[in-house]
Image (cartoon, rainbow, N blue to C red; front, side):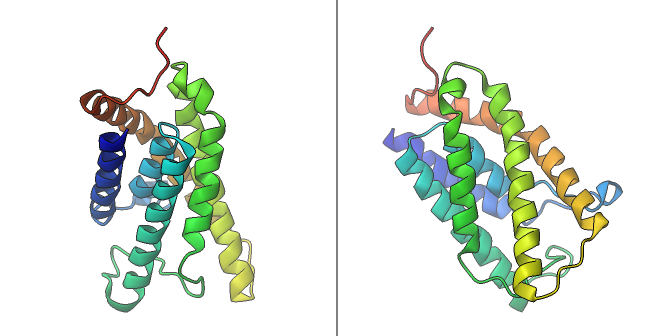
Length: 186
């Protein structure tokens, strides 16, 4: 369990770096693949609740750190929509909620039905981005419904969800190397 947990944290740090170089897909409403939240989501369903909370904390911390950094010295091409008024730490709470959502289907995942977890990653990413959109409008004091933003949210959710089987495959390989049991033996 310990080597697998350390490996997940390493994957989380690696995804933080990779996230900086993933471009947006302009033909899909400038959607992006959110690999950092995807590692948190996919990893959350493979570990216990305590390790999931650590992943959610680290993932939210790294995500907020990237966004705060982007406001002061980030590249405008990479950071297209810097946060205006959300405070540091809000992502930790949202990542924890997403992690608990994934923990809810952990028994089904452990039976070998990983495809349900892959679909739930898309739902969780959509909920995360939509709540963040609502928070920005609420905290900013002005909420203007924007169809383009909703299209970008669902397109980002779909693109990220399509990558989740690859992340699950990587996690299964890492678990085998570390001797960690993800699924029940049939």
